[in-house]
Length: 117
Image (cartoon, rainbow, N blue to C red; front, top):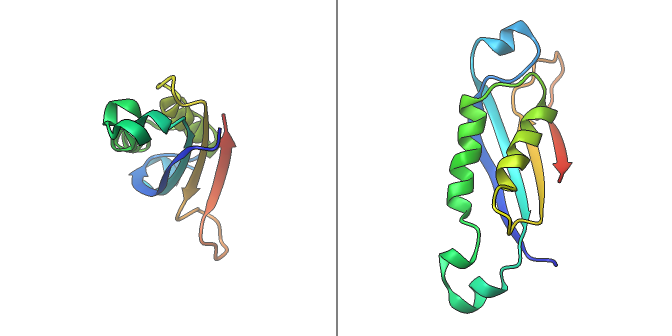
């Protein structure tokens, strides 16, 4: 199957990281998601019930970033993938989590993790 639902650049602040200063204040994250799902039924019916509601998934992913707390980006990405796979119609998810202001002494746009489940 090659049908995808894409969510790109979802931004939310959260407390994730290993360093003590990262555990105190929220910092900005960006999340990209690819969901593999057969959208042929929705393509014919034009009904939201026949597909995965990307609005609801976006809200739940934002909640995970904002309200849950993890040391590693790998765990945060895995947790987001778990949320994405709660709907059994999603057969595969690809999640990219980017820390937009990483605590490293070099100029970088971001650091990130990409997982596929």
